[in-house]
Amino acid sequence: LCPTTQRRFVPPVPAPTDSPPPWLRGAVCIGGHTMPLLVPRLAVPFLLVCLGIPAWRGPSFTNAEGAGEAIGGDGACPACPPCTASDLASLIHIIARDPSLYVPVGGVLAAAAVVGVLVGALLFSTKSSAPPLPAAEKPKSAEDVANDVLDLAERERNILVLETRIRQEFKDSLSMADNVIEQLDRMSREMHGNLTERQEAVLGVTRKMLKNADSHNLTIPLALAKEGDLSASTSMPNLQVQEWLRDCFTPQRNKHGGPKKSMKVVSKSIMFAVRLKKATSVSRQESAPTDFLPYKAESTEQEQKIRLLLNDLDSWDFDIWELNRVSNNREMEVVGWNILHDWGLPKKFGIQDEVLRKWLTSVQDSYPRANQFHNATHGTDVMQTTHYMLKTAQLSKYISELEILGILISAMVHDMGHDGYSNNFHKNAVTPRAIRFNDQSIQEMYHVSSFFDALQHDESINILKNLTPKQYLELRAIIIRCVLATDMSKHFQELKDFKQLMSEKGQALEEWGECTANLMSMVLHACDISGQCKRSETAQTWAHKCHEEFFMQGDKEKEMDLPISPLCDRNTTDIASSQVGFISFIVLPTWQAIADFFPKVAEEGFPQLKSNLEYWESRLPKKEEKKEAKEEKKEE
Image (tube, rainbow, N blue to C red; front, top):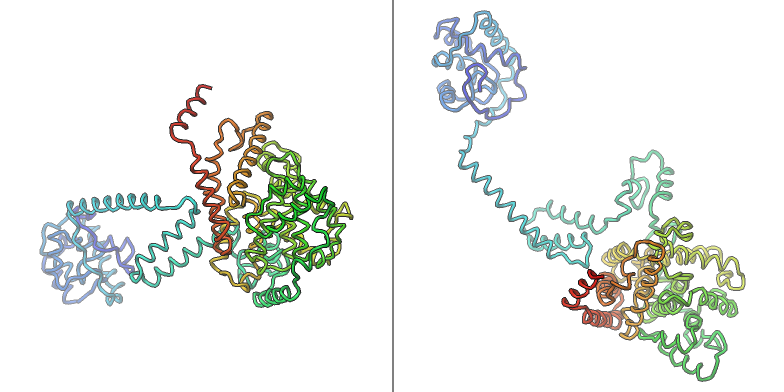
């Protein structure tokens, strides 16, 4: 409402930026409506038109009649900003023609208003060249507004339906970020050619950020997370401060913790190492010791059986359980001895045969035989699978001889001293092992520290004593990295990092110079969970032994009045169901990524994994059996 006439109007646009202050605008409004009371109706317009005193410009009309028509309809008040008259003369002329605008106001107030009008005209006459503002749009009718609301509601309902359908298309085996990336790629393909350059750029950046999203880097300041030249950050007052913050408070991306090298230097080094290894590597017959056993066989028959089994040492279907039976639980000594000599590593790194024999025996004995799953047989199986990956799948092309030694040792000791309980058990029970390692990768920390501790305290088994200090530090970093990567809580992050590196680097040797640690740790982790990739009899044996160890933990948790861990209650756990879930969500995606990188795995191990999954699916309890089991539990 106009404050003076109380007539309703809709301001077409906000007041122009060069409008006068509020007190002056009020003076104009009051003066415009009270001026006809003080002077004859025609004298004032005539006088002001002759004088040609302009007012400040607002949304203008071409003449006084146009402004009068606006007043007569739903236009803006001619005396209130934004003003609808082109100048003060036409404004007064309109007021003089329309008696309905008269308002009885006191003379003193009217006189003050006249003075305000004249002062405002003089002050703002210099701004009369401002461009006119657009005229007011006609307001929508109630029916149009209602239709707009209905259209908006219908659009929102459609979007919700589509969101539900898209969510149903998400794959449970992929992470949320990977599913979103897949949908973005699909949208980009569907809208190909219809996106602007900016929209294409936004999609591209979004995809890259999702792929590179890291749970650690999300909390790291940008100045510390940047790769490359430290001087790229302008927010750091001192480069030494930045270097210190990055070294102490961010995850180390550098390979094995050593000094960072340029990609060009690393590429040349890797190619040189590959050529050197090919030139100096020796065959199994040349590097093998005189005796293929590290101990004296009990009989000739036993020796022949072991020799026959070792013919398949490079095979995916190596029968680890038969070797365990034939060797009388000394499978780790047999396999470790032959694999290390197969690669010529004892000769290369000065490991004496007698020292190696004693060390192999100590590692074999460090695995408790009472463990159903985490025993020396499992450690040997992981080492043999790692050997297959190195030799048959050709992982050895990507890494140096020292790294080959590191990953093989890591495979042997990755569960050294395991007590048959999970990390969560130790955490919940607040065991001395959990206190020692602050609840962080408790078992894995214990395994790797036990290995180095044993070497330090017994010189007779120290297989690393002839390494140079530089070799020792690098090998130690490799073993620590690989063993800690077997912590299952790191599974999804390890898999995500590996798949990201694969998409960026492909399979070219020179591209993996700075990332061999990622490659080795991923391969060892995959070998650690490879039991369900082996032949059916072997896979089923591993599954039942693993669950028996789980059940033993559940019994201990009951005894200690602790929460029973998932899959550890022998009365409620269904082995087939747990294996289907384990394979579908953990093993299958892992070995799918490995098979994509190593084609040989796709030919041998991966088909067997799918076959084992089908076996466990066929063993799933039917709906009727599940219902009966639930009723029995309720009765109990």
